[in-house]
Amino acid sequence: MQASGSNDVVVLDASSLSAGWQPEPGSRVVTPSRVWREMEELGAPPFEVGIAEPSPGSLDSVRAASAGTGDDIRLSNADFDLLALASDMGALLVTEDFSVQNLAETLSIPWTSVGRPISEVRKWRYRCKGCLKVFDERYDDCPVCGSELRSYGGKRR
Ligand SMILES: [Zn+2]
View 1 (cartoon, rainbow, N blue to C red):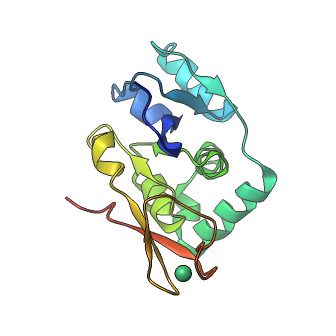
View 2 (cartoon, rainbow, N blue to C red; view 1 turned 90 degrees about the vertical axis):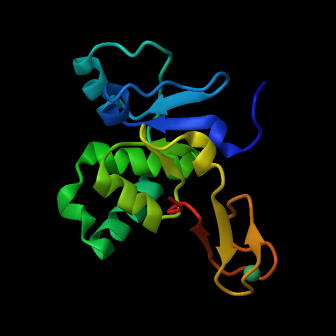
């Protein structure tokens, strides 16, 4: 029943909850407390949502990356928390927010939205910038040569 891989954990944005997103059986749904407060305003989710906070180090990385892409002015503290938490947990980020999606791409965080089925996003792969080897799983560094990995395939369709 339970699929393998890090995408079993889902970090959910309030935008996708209000767009009618539903978890797959066996997946664990978490969100930062700032986003949970937005969800409560929408009405309690019809499934279990755990609350978890991102690490300060991960938040720093996300903020630094957002300044680089120019997304920083369009993102809220809740958005930063979402991205940093997804990064910390190696989770699939579910959001309808274009700026959050854009920064997720930059940070190689796998994401999906209500308009984009999870099965498609699971095709994401990671290519090493150094030796160009391709991996189905995300690593911090290339297990072969230690270079940085980049995701690709997520923009298909
Ligand atoms: Zn490599």
